[in-house]
Length: 244
Image (cartoon, rainbow, N blue to C red; front, side):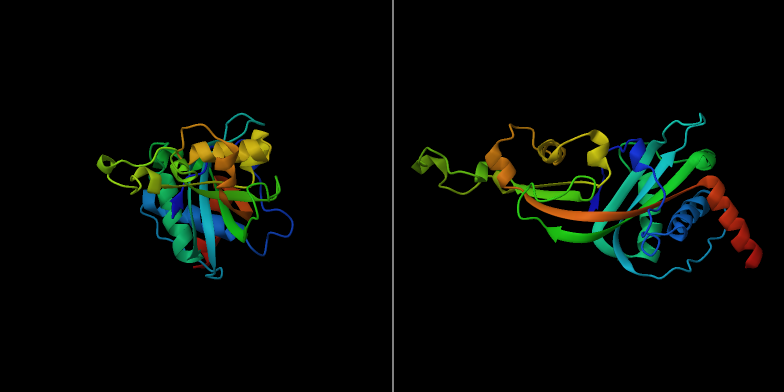
């Protein structure tokens, strides 16, 4: 299941937090960066040396501003909620997020020196008791809800010509959406605003009622993230080329 999160703001850009180094490490970012670099050049890839563990993951590409103090700009971000082996998953989504994010044109070789790579490894998935059972700044949210036409029966009895009570294709549709943990505090949303935004992000364009909110099945999760820039990556590559 590949998902595209919304554009992050400046606060989503940070290096690994204390205690995260045993989960998401710079080596993960270097490997993803190396995959993109080799795809755009004739360079030979450096094999990964980190453990090939399984995680749901997102790969984010940002363009760093040439002006000091300016926030980086999102250049591509796609991930998968199904646990993937890191060696394959990071390489695959490094390229998917660079070349197949429908919001942006493909990343080109000329952009490499302005890029930074962020890796988010998702952990601690839990089914919430309600759409409000999560903590802003701690949890990301993944929501799933049925088409609102299924929430209450029609007030009109079907007629012989109505084709019976078989639901329409639309009524069988399930909506899904996610927000990574940093997005919600960055946007300044409270819980209801975040859930309502996710409902719209999932594709529902109608009115949001309390019954609709209560129909949401919410799964909360946490994220461990690390980010490196081009200069850090290229130094890592030179060191590994020298020892290989």
